[in-house]
Image (tube, rainbow, N blue to C red; front, side):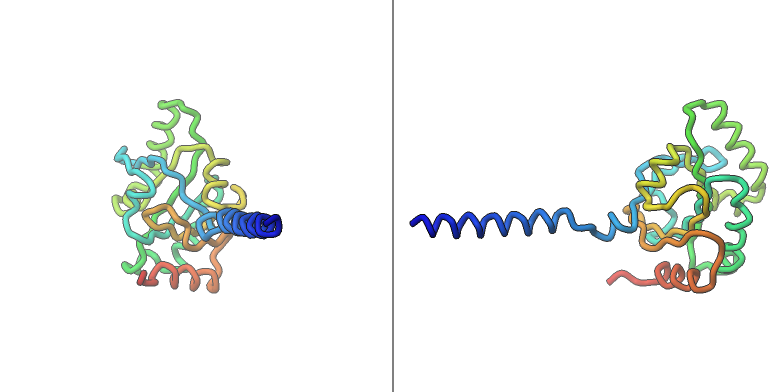
Length: 183
């Protein structure tokens, strides 16, 4: 009788450990990251609920944290020929620290409107005012020193991510992820 109880407890312990390990194991979202739920505002002051308000089921987000990173983003735009490829839906996503000051936010939005005067440019601009560090952690990024080209779905799941300047091999991986069909 005692041996039966011991065997049952050992078996129960093994099953419990297996379930715990399965629950703790990294899944794709934990590894790749998740766009936090937040609200972005276009330069025209239109609110967009992220990630549900992304313009397509798979959107390429070109993420910057500092104005000096703009040249790297332009490299991605030209390298991927985004201006000429209607098959790829993409946005510029500057991530800005939110100080809670409405006047400061408005001044930044006005500055962005002046920087991107064409309607087509403003339509692709999705500035995010949030805590940068929390955004970086949630999205699975390595920091704010580099730009990121990230494929995100409307559930906020990061499907592909590259950092740094344009690279043809990285671009090919992004393109494949963007154009892949879900079955």
